[in-house]
Length: 437
Image 1 (tube, rainbow, N blue to C red):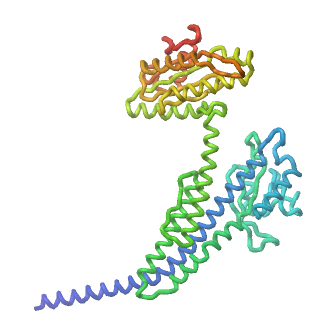
Image 2 (spheres, helix red, strand yellow; image 1 turned 90 degrees about the vertical axis):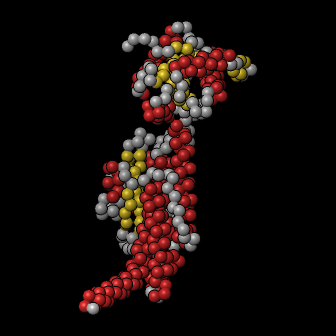
Image 3 (tube, rainbow, N blue to C red; image 1 turned 120 degrees about the vertical axis):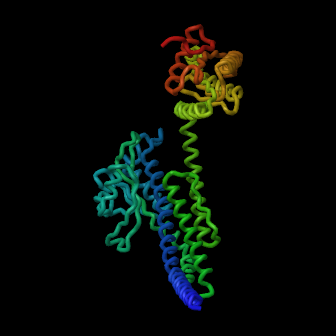
């Protein structure tokens, strides 16, 4: 009996402890609701600020890029060197964007400003020296300006202004307070919902309220992380949230902005990776793809072949028929490469009349056969230009991994040697790398 009594006493004590813990847990949940609401509101504010900063930085960088361009014959000097034209451009941006824009030089003197009285003044509205720091290291920054005109403060982003030679010559300062206020206004209902949930505190709705608030925080965290990834250069960053209210609308707006940025960057990347005349890859893109395919070949233990092609007596075509005829020949040869090669093969114009081809999973014998097929196709092609037909031949050097070399440098050097061996053999030839160092 004594043992049973001790057991019951212990059980009662355990139940008492469980009851106390449950009570404390419910109290903690009740207190957690307003805490979660405060966190959600802070996250909403921080996310809106970050999204506004990203948008402002992209707009300011595009403005700075435009100011540094030369557009012959309309403008042979950069816009930032033409004070009157620069001021007209700033005024037009002010009307279109509804935001203040300032351009300052390295001496911090304001070159152009939407507010006329500020022109020619020294910009001293960033006590922490953000503008000067950006002009030193080229990193965009954000800061708040407070003065007699703006006692409540305005949010600004500063980006470097580069010369066409990529030297920092000043800075562009853009206000992003309006877009920040618009994002906050768009999320006003969300804030009210969060406040209502936090203030409710009904016992029957404690768990539901907590889960709802947690869902808001999760979605806002998701949106904030997506904004951080986008700012870090991840063009695939998207905010996928479960909310269908204003948080969902804010996420949809962010995703639309991210898609537009990704599309613009894709166009720029394509322009920098392609040869404008032929549409093939350029030398830099070809070298990058060679490094990737060589790494894959090492990993898979597969062969890789490279061809170097050079049109024979191409200067004669330019001299006799003019450079437009030479361009037509280059475009025709590029078209032959695209139609003759496999989809997985890589063709590029390396410069002038020289082309390069990468053949994944192709050994020496197959690469030589492909090179001979290309040589014959070029030699038999009649290229129509200005009521006449032009013909051209090509010399081709062939190398392969791993037989001829195992590095990008070695394969490139040996491919050049093979190409010039084909030239020395009489042109219109296919040649492998000559023996010897």
